[in-house]
Image (cartoon, rainbow over all chains, first blue to last red; front, side, top):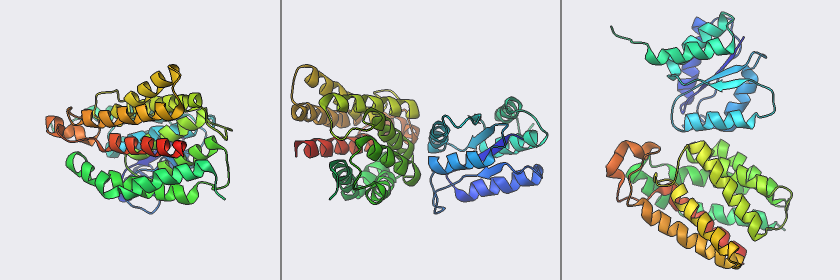
Length: 130
Length: 206
């Protein structure tokens, strides 16, 4: 299964989104939260994110959902830290909650990384109120 | 006995820590009031974690970069972290520093910041201090000036760059939400970058 890493400045937000994805993608073991700093304070940590990517990887690649600002920069840095590790890891351009849930469901259905990324990024244009 | 590279990094850290409140106050005007606090926390870890005995300049800068990535928390973490890690590539295995080495290190650090922040000169960022500093430094070195004179020119250009950031609006980062209201305030990142260069200059002048 394609692994999912959830990045937020807030430890609680990332853990909370993981609770949601666990609910909708029951049985997917490769969903990892990497929110906040090591001591759970607000911030993002590229080294922690890179470790989460390794943990989420089952060989089918990893998709990262990140919140904003330095969340994106730290995720991109984490990807570079893993250069040469042979993990196909990509950052989805998507809202973190909707993107993570959609990515998790798609991954749990056995889709490949291209399909998971596409599904996550589609959430950018989904209208919530008709 | 500690190595020179460690002593220089420690001096940079002490300067940042000493100016923690000043940098945070600058950031309060146009950002989220965390630049000084975050950078001070990061450099406190650098002072604690970088080896005092390893004379390899590249290794020390790489460790500095990794430490900043995992302890700063805000945008300065990946930005300064990448800058130090890129500079480390120019100095891997080196125990002494030539003027040319430093030029390459600055060049790689700037390219790293540009890649990470997707920023250019003129967007009210640390690049508005760093790029003019690099240009002034390179010009001096090319003209046969001493390392000390070249670093003086770099620091003067960086300070002018900080002044320049007061005259422009931010288009990157949180300050960009303020648009023209960011005019009149100096950029905290350009300020901490200038402090860093000044410590390097003073240190290399010894």
